[in-house]
Structure formats: C-alpha cells, structure tokens
Image (cartoon, rainbow, N blue to C red):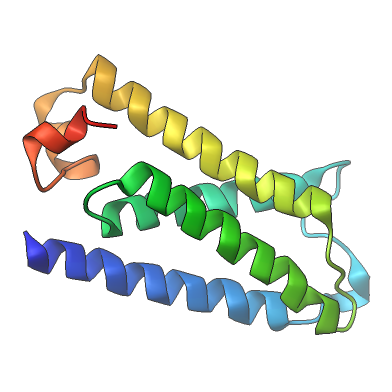
Length: 137
C-alpha cells in the first residue's frame, strides 16, 4: 500500500508543477479560456477540485483536513505567484473558487464513502489503505 501512496505523492508533485507552469504562462491577449461570465472561476473550481482529490489520495491519517489545508495554501500561493506574471493578476475570487472546488471534492468523497459504491468502483476510485480509516473523518 505504501507504493500506491508513493504514486499519488508523485502525481501530486507533478500536478502541482503543472499548475505552477501554466500559471507562469502569459495569456494571449489576456483573454480567458472559457468565454462566458465566470468561466475562469469554473476552471479554478475544477483545477483545485482535482488537486484536492490527488492530495487526499496522497495523505494517510487525517487526509480530509490535510488535503484541504494543502489545497487552500497552494491555491493561495498560486494566486500570489500570478502577481508577478504579465497579463495575470491575483484575485481573492479565484482563490475562493479554488477553495470551493476543494470543498466540493471533499464533500463528494465523504458522500461516496458514506453512501457506498459498487465494489469495483470503490476499489478503483476511493481505495484507502485502511478500511477503518474510511469512516473516521
């Protein structure tokens, strides 16, 4: 099981690196990728919802709180980093969208763990290292 967690830790480092690299790129013409009001917030929400899930898989005990704290801190540092990138700006609303994505990911995981999944999905998606750990948080 430790090998599986190591894979998730590597995935988290790679994903965090990708977030940093993409945040370092200037946007062509400063235009958002999704051309509708709040489209950039949707991207922030999804980006850090996935970040939370990967962090949750990488942590052991206290994984819900630790993954949420790491996601919130990394999202905040990402917004701060964007102050120094041309055509980018830091935004508290972007950070809140990041946190909302993490919160929804955490809520979704909790609901899935409590309501149950078919066994084959449970093993693949939400596999935990210790069965009694699932309901502990």
